[in-house]
Length: 354
Picture 1: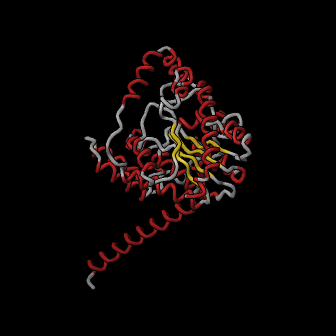
Picture 2: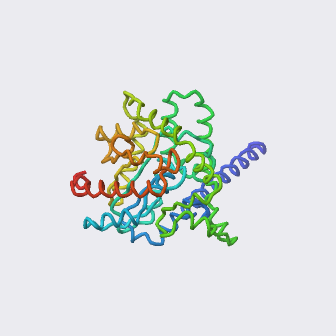
Picture 3: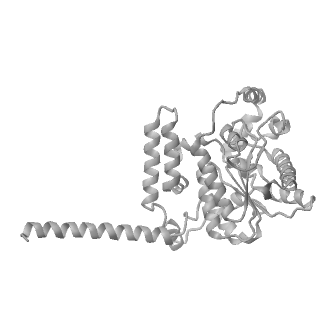
């Protein structure tokens, strides 16, 4: 073999060795590194749940609507009066959508809780997944695994929005960062540096009873200002509710990629030995895909609180923090209504038949 060929072969071998070593290290990190940084709200809730994982029989996954709206101790006490023993945990995380909730469910599954019986979820509008303003934040990178990214990209490409290319590039970049394990060793680094989640962040995230429900957002200046503006704009809110009531239901099937994600979520819940239950909380946004999926039998039971005609109290101005969230009085009303309907659902035996 000539010297140039030998040199070329050596260079190729070196590059292949480097690539193989990189892949091996990446796989090792992915298998062994703890999830998250330990400093985010999602991490705080997962860590708190891990410490008491066998105590809880029910979790509610959702966004900030769940954080504010679902009061675990009240839900549990209402059911106790009906002879139903439940211990619940609020797994709401501000800004979370179905992909983030799938990620949280996977982390819960890894913890192998022994007493988990029910998983409630409000997945919200699938179109909101394509709001990529925070796509490169930790939470956005974490859920961009191959399966979820594929389903979300398929939905994007089959949709009608005009800005497909920049949104697609955001998803591709987040997927690449996920594949490269960006941020996967952050918890190790923070532990080594002695960094812990701020005590105030933990208190705001877990609430007074450490069950994940908190109404402490009022302590934040921006949200306090938002609440004051909302309180001064009752007429505007009433017009929003009237427009919401008048929205026609679209004549179309649910997006197949959204249904696939829901069914994937449902299968994972059942693998945990638990039963899924879908919930639409009261807000001025419709979830027609979720409604259609439930009505067609593609997913399990759905409890709806998005209809002002059936639940006018939940849309009353005095029960709202703003147009999208309940205040404390609204959260209490919603939680009691949910407990009643959940108890009726249990009594019907529907959960045992699926």
